[in-house]
Image (cartoon, rainbow, N blue to C red; front, side, top):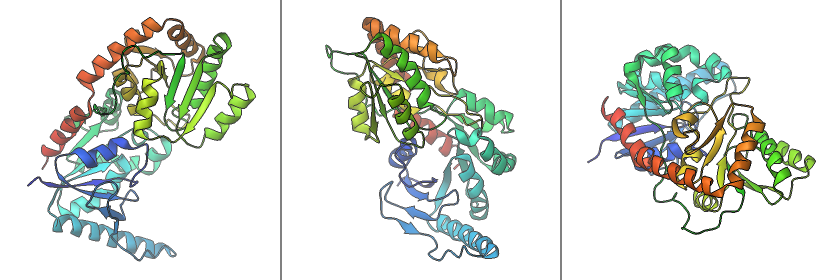
Length: 371
């Protein structure tokens, strides 16, 4: 019988957190999935969409001292749950979840592994509120997982022993993402997939595409995703008189994303470090696009250079270089043979280096090493 483990996530089923869902679904263990807050209040033993159970039903939030009592009771309840179900290791998704679970794992005497994903290792407000606890977390955690080489260095700079850090880059679903059938025409259609938030800077992608559309009126930019910048981007597109050329698709399913990628010429994403130091890990959509045979036009940001080889599988520009991004997009649109060659190189590289199975095996090795 496979060992029992617990995976802790802030959200039960956030559409953009497929990397966490893949851990729940594919790690070779009996997974107890705990969620709803850094210190989880609910759980499921049936996966991401399983029946939801609540640790404590009464939540007296109206007085500060009762909040603290409730938190201590929740810690004891989760700890007892872990012991009762013979949990061998806890995998906390995101640094703040690791901080919150540290007293739980101490009480239960169960090893804690913390998986950092992006903002949790960089963003100023997170570092101010949770980063002050990271030294203790790094000291007490059995292992720490990073998704990019940039993040490995960041965690080491924050005080984590390099011997504890496991580099486990994300992977893609080989059954879902694959190149389009040979001979399928590729019009100058560009695709962007991701949250409309500050780190992905969708407005900069739009400004780059504006320069492409000025020289190639039949070019199109398809943007999938939702987020707090979506309305601002819609307004920007209207002001630029590009509503016919920039299409907002909203939230789309993974199978829909796969189809969109097969119908596109290239993938584009202008990731940036925000004024609050918010930074990505390694965008999974970029890996999925490469697996679909698309060249990628993006930025020298966080883990993106770990995946995209400039001039071979795509092009990388400095953060904020809208004109440079536009030039590369236009070059691919005008030279579809080069786009195809780059896409082929991208597909071969990720199929050898970034599959989901490889990622799952790396994470599992990190967990097994501390059980």
